[in-house]
Amino acid sequence: MNKKGLIIINLGSPESYSVKDVRVYLREFLMDGKVIDIPAPIRGIIVKGFIIPFRAKNSAEAYKTVWTDKGSPLKVITNDFAELVQKQLDMPVVVSMRYGNPTPEASLAELERKAGGPLDEILIATMYPHYAMSSSETAIDYAKDYILSKRPGTKLKVLKPFYNEPGYIAALADSIRPYLNQQQYDAYLFSYHGLPIRHLKKSDPTQKHCYISGDCCELKSIAWETCYKHQVKETTKLVCEQLQLEGSKVLLSFQSRLEGDKWLQPYTDKYFEELPKQGVKKLLVMCPAFVADCLETLEEINVRGRESFTENGGETFVNAPCMNTNASWVDTFVGYCNGYEGKYAGLWN
Figure 1: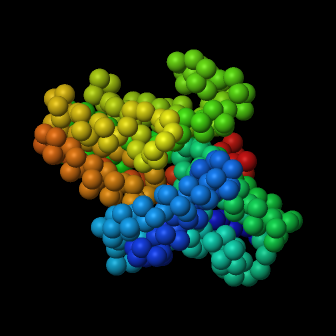
Figure 2 (figure 1 turned 30 degrees about the horizontal axis):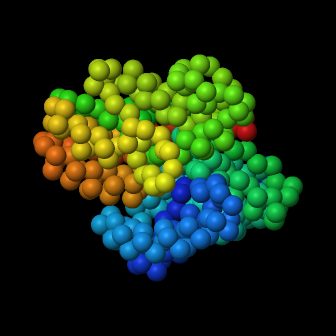
Figure 3 (figure 1 turned 135 degrees about the vertical axis):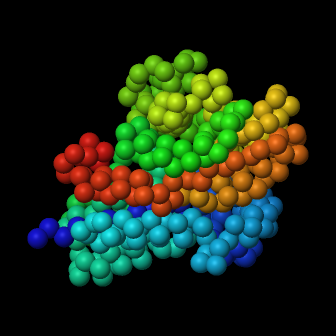
């Protein structure tokens, strides 16, 4: 029989919230040439000489506020999700992280242990609905390069960005709906992870579309396949249609940026400061760039964002959790994997 298995990949996290472990994690993350895409020698000077010395302690304190008894929320949720998926799939399932542990090396070994030997085919699925050079692309390339270096004959199938796939949209809407029923809001904020504009231009295969005109995200192009901005806008539009949200109340913003470059705007943290002064006192926040809650959602949004919003006059701040282990999302993802040669073949490369 054709032996096959599944590797679920997420971003990763430090081994603990100690400054030492956070420093190790940040070094691996920020030294990735697809995250900070400048020549390695210059990147090393900036990351090791300027960013890490000033950021490690603050990041460690942030991780401490969200750490659980089982460890990092991102890893705990991803492992729980994988266990639920495993119960419905007739193939071994393991988790890998782009940064930190488990590495692709450890994950491949675990997958082969579960399968009883080398596999003929491996499905690789990153937990990123949207394409980005610094998230989905680097995670996929990292895993593929290792697997093929050790098992060159293995057939690999990679889950493509699923930002507009109906099942995903339905599952995302299903995870948000309970928070809509709690009360009326003045605004609905969809906050996505930020990216340097340079990354969008670099990822444009035509080199003639992204940021050439003011409405490039609305002008159909092959560039949409690798355009993060278009994809998050599409996700927002489709979810709002499913939930029947009033368009005038819907806002889209970007979080988690580094200084010194032009990033996607508007900025989420600026919205938290400005919206209460504009009459938005009751706010619902969603973070669809992530399928599992992590530092960026639990601390940056639900702690610092909440504080900023209320300090500036906001009254009600509700942060809808990510899909995490939502049953609709688990079932949807299982469907993608079971149908990779059939119904959902178009979602896999």
